[in-house]
Image (cartoon, rainbow, N blue to C red; front, side, top):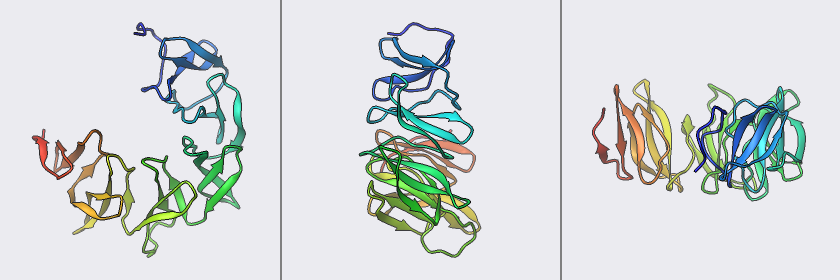
Length: 231
């Protein structure tokens, strides 16, 4: 058990480490409360997500790097507008190429493997897939939401406005229904499992998802049954 302190930390441990604010700046603490690294690194917050031995840190405005638990650079600082954890030696990032901020995948050496001209946003990998969002609002493109694998191959191409990360085999989606945005859930084949009837929806966790209907919240199981009454 780690005693209480007045130090600011991230919300969760990842691969055995959590980000922490120290007197020197940014640090990483293990589950025994031992600080493995402490140094002067600027970050938005302390929710560092270690994966495959490294975590992304913001070292300057619109500049990220990947470091290990000792603060050693594993990917040198590079211009980016977001950097996600590594998965199978690739990491989703948002970079600027030719004046366009777009989704991309980089290697463990920082090389750009894939640049997605039509997609603005990219999420971390979850259950082997990363979600990307179409860049051109209002365009009539059929597939506005896609999921890719670690090779950058399109696995799912969907017409929905926005989708979430896969968790427990499900991901939420939203689409316009009679002039308002409604949320439902799909499986990893893109099949609609729960129709778009909710006003808001969250990712599943341990078989349940939090949803909003009207001005009330509740928990549903994988069949859409409300396990807790709307509150």
